Image 1 (cartoon, one colour):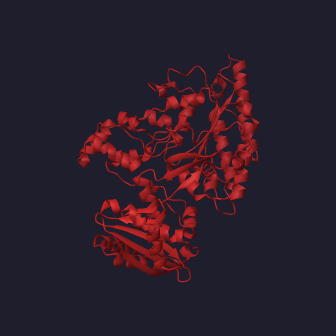
Image 2: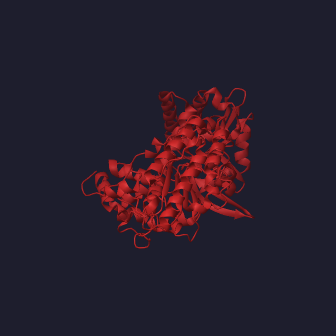
Image 3: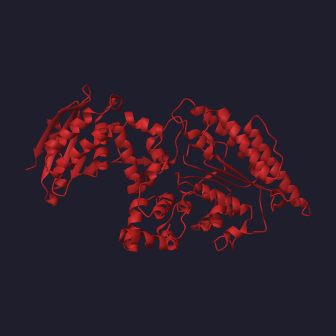
Amino acid sequence: MIFGMEKAATDIYTFENLRKRGYTYVDKTAILKELVDDSRGSQFFIARPRRFGKSLAVSTFKCLFEGKRDLFKDLAIEPEWDWSKKWPVIHLDMGSAQTRTVQELERFWRDMLKDEAKRNGVKFRDDENPAIAFKNLINDLYDLAMSAKRKTAAKNGSVAAESGEGQVVVLIDEYDKPLLGHLMTPQATEFKNVLKAFYSVLKTLEGKQRFLFITGVSKFSKVSIFSDLNNLKDYTLESVVATLFGYTHDEVRRNFPQSIAALGAKLGKSPEETFNEIVKWYDGYRFADDAEPVINPVSLGMTFDTMRFGNWWSLTAMPTFLMEFFKVRPLDVSDLSVTEADLAAYEPEHIKPVTLLFQTGYLTIKSCSQTGGIWRYGLKFPNMEVENSFLVDLSALYIGTDNSGSANIAAKVVNALLARDPEAFVEAFREFFAAIPYDLTSKQNEQSWQAIMYVVLRVIGINVGGEVRTHKGRIDLTVETATDAYIIEVKRDSTAKKAIEQIQDKSYTDRFRPSGKPITLIGIAFSTKRRTVSGVKIVKDA
């Protein structure tokens, strides 16, 4: 880090450490106040991708309710908060709960509850059932706080005894971590049920809670985990908290001017050019249909720390079960739209890949429209960093493990297009499809082959469009170079001739005529039996 630059945190997840060690805190406390002042309720759930500051927000709530005013100096909430009051806080961080069995998870919970009891100055009443131990802890903290309230002269020094109100604050970070590692496994239902039983305590003791805040990556359907929490408000897609996680453009400019200038100086760019590059790499996340986009805070911090733009998102690998899913059902990343119900939640036993990609941060909201009573969301990759990471992961899956071979095929594809040689372009793809593993093509349709072609072309930097709309239909694939345009139609167990006829009958070439570029029509037929290209027809548009 260059002397004089702001200190951007990349690996500090506690508010107290960040403030005491002099790191830059982008002030989100005005938004936090919207949640803690009782005007909107007192029980909230928000799902966000990893690396967006959920743990930092939870830690900030903890310090706020514990009355650590010195940490909030010069922040928006400092003059607005009643610092004479303190509450006992139960902070459950599930982020490290990588448990193989529910028995391990139950032991993890009991150990964590024991630590929270000790931190709050009460004796831990253990039980084999962690839900009962959780209930005991809330009751004991509430009783102690109420006793302190009635006996204001008592001074026992515990956090609970100093409470200004007789209610408990419960903060749960990464609530879904114990389940995520077991999705699409026989253990998913068992983990779901034990989570539901544990969190149901929050409903039974609702009257003893001043504030409840739950975060996680996934938003499972309410009946799965939180069916008993009737008052839990899901703010995942609400505008009021849309910029709580991540940085707006204005926040980056105000909080990191020296870092932007230093990065620009190293790259030979002006501060404005550097900021535009930041936007291209790390911006674009929208968490409500009418919200302004936000920049990934950890990726931005890594860029300032290393003084270079990098694909930091790749450090967060795509979940293994999603990779296995895409093996047999390639995702059409060229056309992504879902209903509000699909975007909102899913059942742990029934994965919706597009929903999970949105919740894990690979996709974000591009548009929103209503037809009748149904809302539909158009989704997209938020930025270049995430798109590159996703497509590289998928192309590696499709191409296989022989990186040198895949690189050679990719080079042939690029060279063929640069040489304006469509025959060599198709031949390179024929070679590529012949090398695809058997299990990847075990469930075939035209969209599968089309999706694989789209991903491979995008990851090697080709300007490719998929499911391109025209006034008469949708083109499977379009490829455009500086000199030429190509229209590709894919057919399964049919003929390449019929693919060409469809392009001509539906006047797909009209889309490119204004460009003045030569247009080449490519029809590709795939054989289910042979699992590869069975026919090709290439026609130069007149």
